[in-house]
Image 1 (tube, helix red, strand yellow):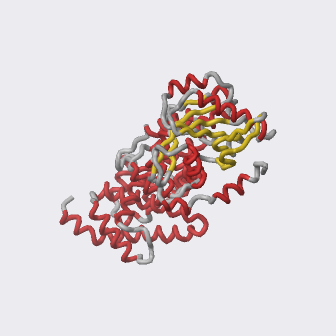
Image 2 (tube, rainbow, N blue to C red; image 1 turned 120 degrees about the horizontal axis):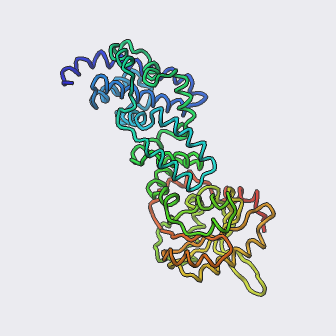
Image 3 (tube, rainbow, N blue to C red; image 1 turned 90 degrees about the vertical axis):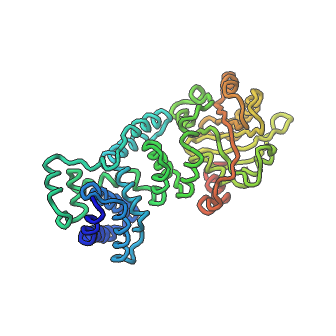
Length: 425
């Protein structure tokens, strides 16, 4: 469409579009009192569809989005969120999550209530195959195409009517599907981060579920994407004997929660720091440490003293995982993996099983964190031990932003939660 033709249509069509978006916004705000985030996301999704429809039908380009943004802000000056950039994201949001994909996400989410590596990988691959070409979501039968195209924008009416025509379904049913999906349980800032990430659909969906399950802010989500959590937790070739030393489903969950490598934020430190300094740093930044360890971990002790026979021993770190209902003993090594490290960790697992583990706790798990090493050697070394042990690398980084401190629990809050199920000395 030529520039002249667009400019002629702009004044009349833009006014009608602004009116349609404004009407839908007013209806949305009535419901926002009870479900603000879900309703606003649904509004953005509808607006995105509406603009995509008009782009396809009228040949609208990016300049129209600029004019639309100005017109909405002029007519509704007290309403936020209608910058050119945000409207562009609304279009991306609608294009990324057409109704077909939302339906599939609802189905997949129900299958991942008890996640395992195998389930996550299978569902990720399945979602990745649902690739949507831009504007491919607007599909009509021939008859419906004729009806819609013959109507001028002025007669299109509410955005909801347009959506019903596109998806051949009542708007209430479309809204139900939208609000059953995982995308309504995280905020718009997080969705913008995910859209900018260019991640395939399956991985994007996994990050959404993790953000919901762990209560991540958008800052935390950004950091997890930047450190490639999906690869470290889901696709990494992990070294452990969990599958043969733990019963199901505990073994599946332990394998799922384990990462390789772990990435710890050690501000002002280097990769050559001593093990004891490493431990002190982890404990002094315990909230960020627990964030990296993953879901359900709580701090128990550092350099935990055990008197065995006539000798004194000190375990590096002991955590408790609420989901696994088990103590986790962690040995930190500032050097690459050596087979003899396994014997020391195995010893501490036996001691914790004997002295800390209660009747309702599952078998204690060991995690050996080394600064590199040969994974083949580590796997061979595991074969001689009956206790459940995992071996991972760790890396130190300075990339975790300072503003995470305000969104994570304090050490006192972590310890208060821990006191509910750990006997105090």
